[in-house]
Image (cartoon, rainbow, N blue to C red; front, side, top):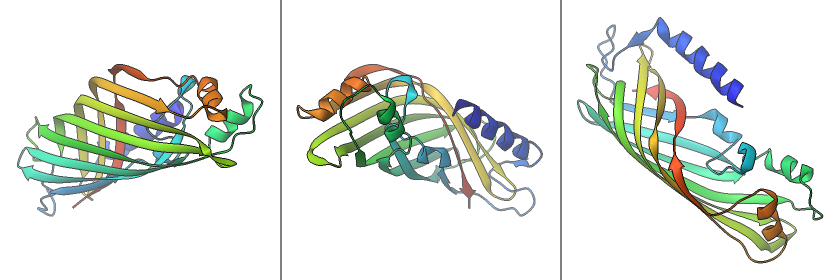
Length: 219
């Protein structure tokens, strides 16, 4: 997964290196004020991860960003969480006596407020942003609906990022930062409780160092 992510980032930067522009398109004079973005890799793994970075969920998400002032923008992200295509493979490989089949459903919401630091108008250039996100999912044993795991994750970050917008309106947003995260899990006694132990899932409040990227279109 890390190698694939790195390859995609390198390809994206190569594509953008010869075609970079600010929010004001030098050719058409178009003033970009909005972007719509996603990350296709989130279909493989969502915001919940177990030991060894095994994805528990996948995510179908979209983010919408709007310029509020010449150097500021607000971004909202929404996602639907389902069952990761990799989690069942991991469960089948785990040393457990039960045959657990998992199906999941949940949501993920994010909020950013970006302050742009360079000469480009929002939403292009380097930026600083407070970032808040909350995700919740319920993972059920499909053979017994009474057996489930509900999980929640809260993130609060300070983020530094860079968004490039090409002359054609293609957008690439890359960011990292520092903050805190709180993960919590709940389940009734039974097979799913053993499943938590298999994946080493415990309630945790820890320091968080986010890294992410999204692709999209500006208009």
